[in-house]
Length: 330
Figure: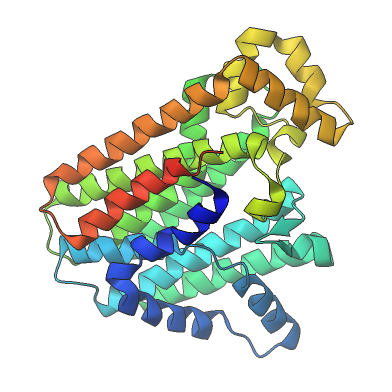
């Protein structure tokens, strides 16, 4: 599948379609809740709105609410906005951590204003998300949301601590990406089950689905950091290599070339040459294919967890999303 074909089949087309009206309401809440009368803050809100991606997480929450109950309640619309504000806040901070210059083919906040602005703006969005969640007056939802934020922070801290750690195990890597990425997917599904009246086992089944597609999503992203084209993907690539992050492709390359060669590659001042050499070695030793195969295993596990539910357009959209996650292979 080409990048153009992928763009035409973005998850927003097949995941959001069954909940399109619901998503329109979430967009309205996001605009209202993110806005601020301060002109500079509002300009940041408007700039990051142009980063709008696939809205996977709020769509997952609303789809889960449809599957597990009689449809989204006011609570779910608010929580969908909370989840998306949290996601946007993490992106603002991620761009600082990774020194990214592009997102959606637009300059990142740190590229335009330095690091102070995106750090504080991310904090602003965190505060907005917490404020909205508090106004929903639902103790369980607040606890689930707070746990997700904690897990994400621990995941990011673990990744920083693991930079250039050539003793990192594959199991440790998987736990790291579960925390920093997959937790938000599973949390979205879990929040969709609040006040649904669904059996706990069904809520856990959907949360398990979310976690597994989140794992696959991050593994594919880690592969694309090596193989992707910035012009087509619209964001800075090669940042994992620059920061010494031992992602799955690198962990599987390590036994083949040894610590010294990989360390020398990651410390190379030739940014373009470094990425080119890693890509060549990754293909020579077939570690990209094996890493993507692991992502496909997670996708199949995700789809298996949907067997607990009766067929519906909402289940179909989740199956299509799972397939899309690994169709991003380049």
